[in-house]
Length: 419
View 1: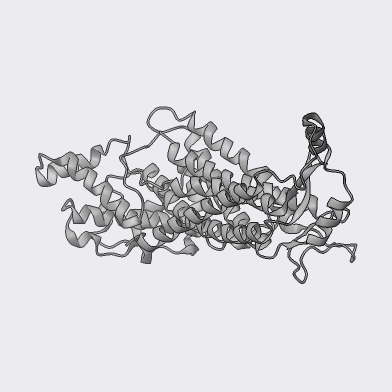
View 2 (view 1 turned 90 degrees about the horizontal axis):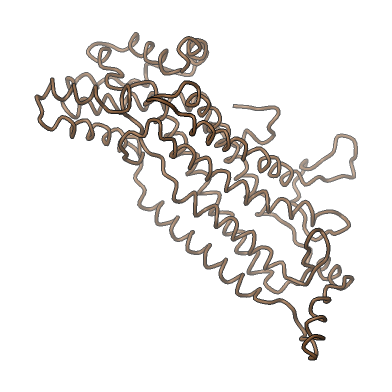
């Protein structure tokens, strides 16, 4: 996937491309088919065919065109799978599912991978930020408010503020879930219950239907959940988690572009051959990583707002347009977040901190007005420092980061891969 007007898009790789979504949809159909066989609702040999052998990326163009007729790509996909599958597989493909099941669950599969990538980048960023906070605990600099010098602070405190922002984002990303969504035509698993009743004569037909949904979730590596259908919190919560990340990253980028101005000169982006050049001014080096992060921070919230708008307009048992509005919106937001995560990690890995310039700017600026006013009010001589609880702020941020990193390592060690 390439996007000429979104520099850095290649960093997303195959994530959330048309190909990835297509193969995720086939994953869902395959997992469901296996579940039907495992629960004795269809002949066991009906699940012997590997559905992935029936479809490849050369089918994308035809599926895109055919999706126009049914307002979603699942309908032509099912037609194609049934045309190409041998008996006895053909007749059982998609039985008990509906288009929304396949598309919602496939999006959750792709989001699971995007979230995994973002979690990894967040862990990398926390390590870099922790190092900055520790290294520059005592690096004095001008603290600025409303663009003007205010009181002294340290770059360690500033790095701790960045660190806290990324920890806030990580808290949400860690908690967000990617649940299976299979409910049949109107979100009640009625077809699955009917199949269980007719095939097994089961008094516990509803339990069989739920086991089938759980089997599908487990096979795909998703969270188990009863049908959520027109309750769209799983979608909006993922969108909110992504925006929380872009907010934190944008805040870092805002400081870097400001403090990197030559007249301030306290920070600089990592130097890379060919990065930051100008088309006409060879003397110029632009802070392109920060620029691209600010771009993402500006454009991500409206995408999440679209998801929330759609969630509030889901009517009946399947929405007429609100559901459709989610798909590409969530895909774009997810991919852009993954790209921004990579940009942020690069920025922090090589961020240049000019401690001498920080000291010089501090020495040339009067930032003791508040301290003098307090001393005068109390009729006492001012103290030699004015850094408040800076050390405690740094220590607390480092502890938060360490907690998250430990939890992330534990999650990675226990996480089960999908079958």
